[in-house]
Image 1 (cartoon, rainbow, N blue to C red):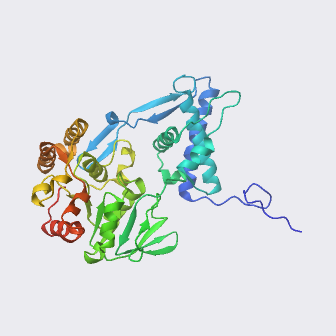
Image 2 (spheres, one colour):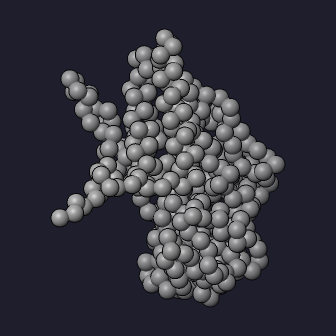
Image 3 (tube, rainbow, N blue to C red):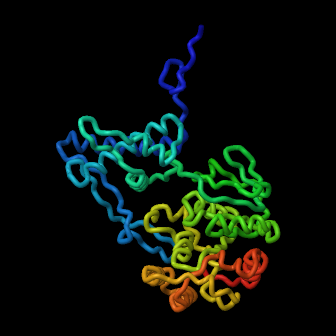
Length: 383
């Protein structure tokens, strides 16, 4: 009887999967990182790796491009430094896991990579990782150290967000008609690069991005995307990378304007800022995530009076809310913008926040049938 090939790829008769050009480059960077550590050690010097710092002080506002970018500052991670030894070990463990994934041509979730590296160090009671909160930042450190995207490291995150509308996608060879996604919509994956997702047919005029799934449900149930010829998305609050990347691709490749409907509070303003300019922690990815042309349609601080809302919709601002609002007003991209300065000043002067759902007090479909259509027609938004 003929022997069967061993599925792991390590048995006789099984050939290793052919690597894509992108994977070959990433693998070369990983091996280069390991070689650097080995050569340093063999040369009698302390093993160390250099990691670009992902901090506010190492973030540069590129006014011309309208995005946040990472600066040149780096920090060394040393094996024989007591405060850094564990992170050094964790970095090398994750690098080894990524090498295995690339060579096997397989992917893993952030959670899966955490468990792959999690074990008790022999002869001790010390774990390599205790929580995923330790693991995820190490993976981001590897991204910037290698100059490689998470997708190039064969790692994906949990799906968050959804989409419906007048567009057809091809997802790993499967045609996805977003006009026929029912009440749940197309779940946005974390990896949405062109080699995974292609745009097939699109009649939409713009993308309406809303903050939460609860609001998205109202727009979808009312068939807003059909009546207003758009694509409708949400990112379950702070949109994950997959959602932001897809929005950017829709904007850059299909030239669709991105219009945002978010809460009237510092958190809603921050979400818009991240979509538009990028974030401090992911400044190294701004070129593939930020959408400088994104528009903030609402809801706005003027809407309590303009829409005749009920007193009950007010949510008192806390001292932390006021502090955060002033911090956001000082962002370089908002500091010189009169419209945003007025908006945030009005919010603080009001002394209360409002959620998009507050518009339901007018009518269950007021936001989809009156508020957003009127604002779109008047081009009443902030940029």
